[in-house]
Length: 520
Image 1: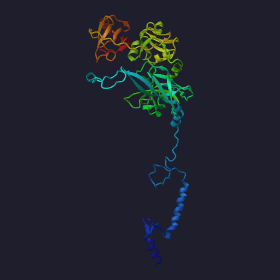
Image 2: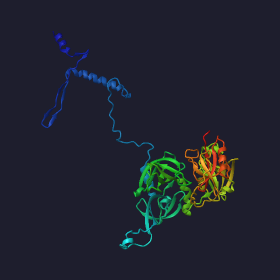
Image 3: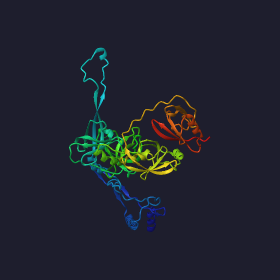
């Protein structure tokens, strides 16, 4: 009976083939005055030995596998509790390669300046229209034109300890007074030491003497697209503004002149940044901030510092820049022109006109020649030639590799000095007489003074976008033409397997045009 009672007593603890543990009794919390009594768990005595055995087994099991990593993709078995970690940004790491811009700015800021230039312009005095009827109604100032003062804001940077400041020429154009504010708050007067309008560069000289902090000039040629750059300047007169970006492109042409070679950056540049420095991460000036695209965002342009380095000594010493002159008018060589001239690929500078009294004429250069190199330096693009020639002083002898209709040859030319640029001549009106329609979609006529003149261009024809009304046709296929009929015949008889090569004059300048015609 005792055995039966024991079996009956434990029968209620058997469940699903295992031992059914007695559920602990939970005594809930009770409010006792201001205190809370913590709930107490009561465990039957018979369960304690079993719990101890289970705990020991768990410790042994964990101790055997503590060095094994926990798989994050585990989908079976009991859930694994990951160890708790500290906050991920409690101690932020220093990322390798991160530029230390604050340290760079602190080092170069003393050499960056803000520039204010004043100029005077005359404005016609305004006459009160009521004076005609009622007479003068009050005292008026001085008679005649009124002098209006204008202020321009810009930036610059000190290039030596004597206080020479580099900036843009347009910042101080026509200035009657210039003041420079240093990073320490001092304002000093300055005089314009030299100006190079072709490159839009100027050098100022701080007055008052003393020694000044100055920047180091880097290399814009070694600058790579994608490098970080930092701009510091005076946008909108705010002063000491730092922006950062990358070099977006190099060798940009903006139509500012024959020496266009701008660096494009997305570092924020605004009015007032003109003349300010563009630094690389070594704290060296690699460009001079100059222009912006008002229709775009993050598109700014800067003059390469290599251009400044070439003219800086002359601007400081003499106030002007002497450049060599070859005496040719050039144009780019595109694919149709290269095919017409027999070149293996589009390269070099095509000579479209030669000054008869220039070094080029003395060296035997003629229209139709293609200059391929200067002293061994290849000319990939036409605008490389003016830069290479301008870097040499007048009197320098240069060796030119030239491709002609008879082959390639090397000639020597002694450069003379490049004079001030002359203004373009006004374009004369074309004659009204109409000629026959040529095969390239143009109408031509004879002008007794000028020759064969283009009077009309078919907007859907092969010459659209290449020729304009008023252009004068001088040659067809390398042969001169005397009248409109001869020009039309030569164009029609030109081989169809290559473009028709015309030499024209436009606004007093000669150039070549290659016109591709559709096969019949």
